[in-house]
Length: 458
Image (cartoon, rainbow, N blue to C red; front, side, top):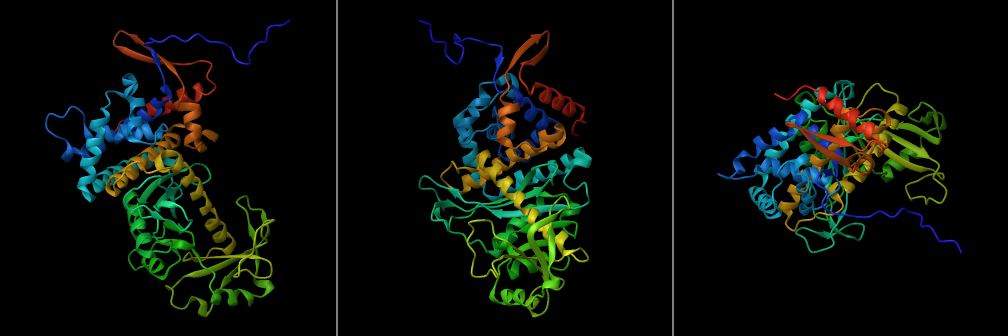
């Protein structure tokens, strides 16, 4: 009788290893913080909240929480994973100290939020300069996508309310800078709202757009070089008028609701006026056509607005709506970009779907659940989450190449951050040796080399 052999080898476990470092790949985030000057910027911004004789710097505490969230944590207590590795992350404050700081900053309200946002904006401008041709504004324009996201609450939390999807929680409005097909994206706005907040609330979209513009370098805070994209939730008279206001001159591409007036105009469009839609690679999009609407359908809207409609054969099993026509699914958007073909403008607006990827990354980086009870505390949590997402966008932009730059947070953690290492002390130097057999060790070492070559912050 043969003895059965298991599928996995048996390993004897012993405690007491002192030179083994878990989460060794996290040095990529630490080095990114150091090279972009985020640590000094946050520390300087939070100086008013540092108590005399305090052991831990408030900026370091906040960054430690952000690093923990970037590494996969979803609550304040997950900072313990950094505390366990002082050789990599330095001294980390205790859980009570972290909680007290969050309460103190939350009690300061907008003052603390403005300080953190100001530091992030200053560092973002430096990061984009360091990224050079990889920066989001390398082509001379910047695209900001605004989109709402539902965050379910599993307990009674302040301002949690029933949502339009019959769930219970909050309805934040987020803003992301699109890095284009060669990158991911970075957050520039997070407006916390109750779960029953309306999708078409113009004042909320204006506030979110203001937060997003404040995060951009000054040359992109107004002018046609900055494009604001939204779905149909942004297609309101007040928001479009705000975007096109004299002196602001922002470009926009906002989805519009198919009203009865628009529907009747679509029915009158002759067959010769429809143009085949295109894909990103220039190929014809099968079963999709676009046309531009003119006439009284534009009455009451800002001067220079163009209304473009697309009709497309629905996917198998999809149900048509009352506003669809001739068995075609109709969608519509408005833009103020002149002189460009409608097929190019429709493709640009359709690429707004990349915002869904950014929301998925945010859910995997602290937005799955708001962990704190008070609204003021959760507003601060959204800022921490954005710092974590900033680091997860800046590190690949500055240090990774090829397909690795497109990796989303979960893949970055699985392949890079979770790599183990061995800490070796020789003389006064500490050397972190990564596992040679780990398939992505080369990515980590090459990325660290690129970060090391960057100039130190002022």
